[in-house]
Image (cartoon, rainbow, N blue to C red; front, side, top):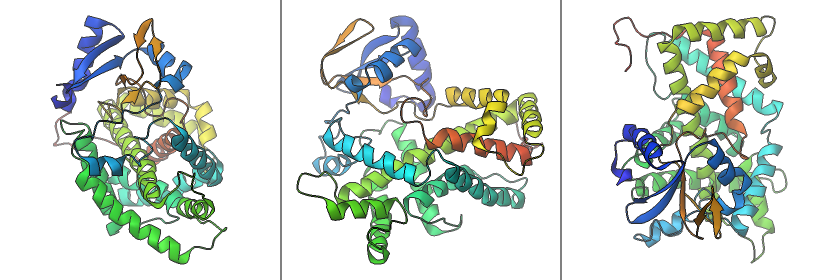
Length: 376
């Protein structure tokens, strides 16, 4: 009954089980047996050394709702390891790189968005904004996916951010396996409108953004291709939601800890000011000269429990892990200590975390209100 625990208890439960049973142990999550993986050595073996063996996704979680499963099965995060997943992964990596992922042009998008965030902060000094980081992270991704930046008061960004926040609460709670209907349908409405607009305004062969690139690919597909419009909608969801929610919640956690430990806040600011003394703005390359700030960001990633139950993996064939035999189709759940940007899919998240945190710490000091209690 681990999925029915309060989110704050997930980590306590995992730590207790780790002490009792070691780095690899099994339990039942509802009716399904699962293997929980803990520790750097076991994680490296499963996620890197034997990545293909653990790259599958369980395909029977939503069997109680066939319509929902047919819809969600088109998502790449939930897709099983196979030809369709590989085809879409190659397309996504190539397209995102063409639009600046890991390059200076992506830095400029992030830094450009920070100008709007700083203006918002200046206007709301002394006030609290829970969605500030969600707005910024979502807009950075929107520029790549849809070729558009939205004002923070725009209905589109408000609805998207609210959907993501609510879905994140559901995904980290007792109803993680059953309650995606409302969120998915709301996002589908928005994504369908955007795709329709792109179809009407696009020039084939001259893509403006990710949607145009996918529509160009649809023009070239044959009967053997896995590309289709339904999958495009869910593909956009899978790129947009994790990039928004995990990044923003990690930033929230980071600034909460910096406010709680002002001496660390001050030391980060001192290092940032020394390195950027004669510069107009930070660049991602500056991280090499900011070891303390980088260490703080890494510690925030370690301690920020953004997805307590993680995303389930499934073995693609009979395999072994730390000497234990795992049959094909076995559930595998990485533990809560795995930073969300670790592994071979590292891309936008580390750059966004660094540039956002450094830019804001250079311009502002974050403190608790005088009449507020310190956090527990």
